[in-house]
Length: 225
Ligand code: IPE
Ligand code: IPE
Ligand code: MG
Image (cartoon, rainbow, N blue to C red):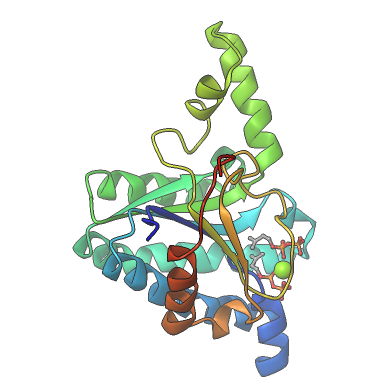
């Protein structure tokens, strides 16, 4: 049985869900938050150490301004409303991505949420926000150059946003789309990938557990036989 330490998720399909059920993409984003709650609880229940959620990509700036503003507002309200529950559940929050390019108000809230949960231990939740894997890799290589250390695998690992964390064991992408969309390209080298037909707001605990059970029985080779 494979141990699961780190699960990464591309939470896709909110927009389509919103249009189908409420004629509004933003309603889908709001509905998607319930699934975030459900999956966090499932991770704690299954003693998973790290959950990395793709919330906003470096390419999502191409979307209409009103959708972008809505998404940031939604996250702001989520953090304000849920921070005490998050602390209670012993969750450590960490944001990965170009956080310094986000609205100042949101940046402050992000810093505060990280600070308040820095010593929490049951689950680390990474939220990838204004995240793009290519930018991450370029910044990592720049850091390595500045530090005047060798460009090798170990030093890349140790200068990514995900330093100190194991690579994801499994990646789930909901929304019936089979691509990585610039997510953790380096870290996913040997990750087991699961594409899920359901849209993110329709994805439930039992769907997550089904994938977890499938994962546990896969023979992982890492190049060996
Ligand atoms: C993913 O859902 C959430 C974000 C990118 C913020 P989408 O908004 O991409 O939903 P679809 O793919 O358009 O349905
Ligand atoms: C990936 O979804 C980003 C997030 C889930 C945050 P997208 O919906 O932006 O991906 P593409 O554009 O369809 O590849
Ligand atoms: Mg999408």
